[in-house]
Length: 118
Image 1: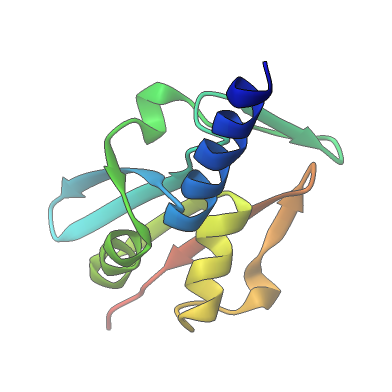
Image 2 (image 1 turned 60 degrees about the horizontal axis):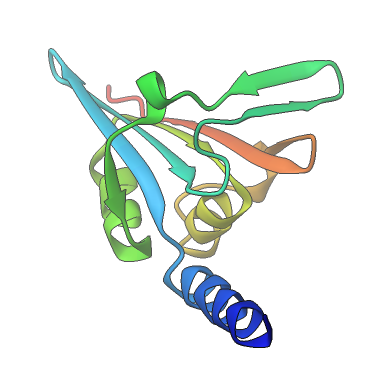
């Protein structure tokens, strides 16, 4: 039993270091929308403060990406829909958005980025 618990702790630490995300990209006309969520919230419903977000497989389902890949997707998108403390934190740390735009729902960070071109 001790070996199984130690193995699970090791796996959890590797997941934390890798910070894997689920990303889906949709192109329409001249716009590119990317939806990225932390793997921990994928397929779940986040609730809090009278709000609810369904982090569905249909909407967010796509490819597994690491932090660098996720940031590159956000940089190249017209619209970014982000759910999860890790992805939102990475985007804020990379100065791609302001922390003032972040909304917490049930303790989970949510961020929408719209890039307007004139």
